[in-house]
Image (cartoon, rainbow, N blue to C red; front, side):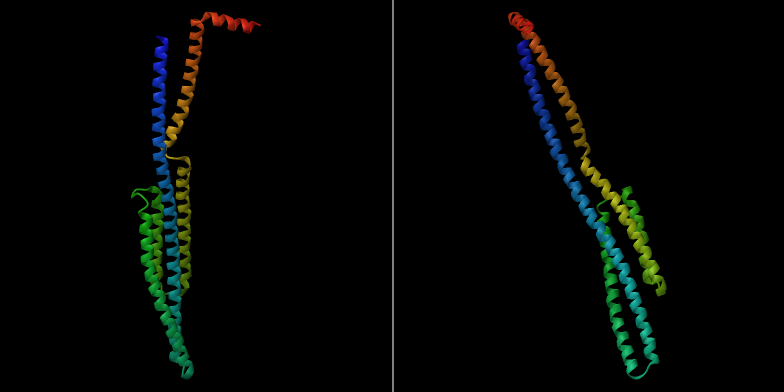
Length: 242
């Protein structure tokens, strides 16, 4: 009877272990996919943030360059009005060249405005609306947007450099914030998903419990065998005494 019960118990135990291993495998495969998606998300966020920062800095530099070219154009026109002869024609030609360069710069700045908003929208779509880690980036972007508007409206060329540096400083802060976000996500990728970590922990404890249970069964089976065959137990003891 003991053998029948033991056989039934070991069969049930083997079935339980097989089922548990299947569950662990399914959980790990699913969580592995989640980790892959998280890593792909991290790479996508890195690319989107880098594009946003680059576009903001590029727009600031383009606006400043266009503003300085416009100021040069106005200065050359004033000088041309005061000059005469060949010098006047030369001044006008230079002024016309600067006017065309200003138009090109202005068109580029307007195009960059669209690209900045496109890049910002791409970044926003990576985060939840109430994501606190991204709220600081949003506030800093609003600051950059206000400074870019101020840069477009500024008429004093001596102040352009200062505003441009403020924008660059703000984008550096966005860079540092982005590093923090990416570092947090990378740590999550390295540690694994919560379900994976829980499965790993419980798997270790189950293995320890199973080893203890199997050792207990083995000892119990050995004792039962010795009790059922006392003559073999006597032979074993005799050999042990020798």
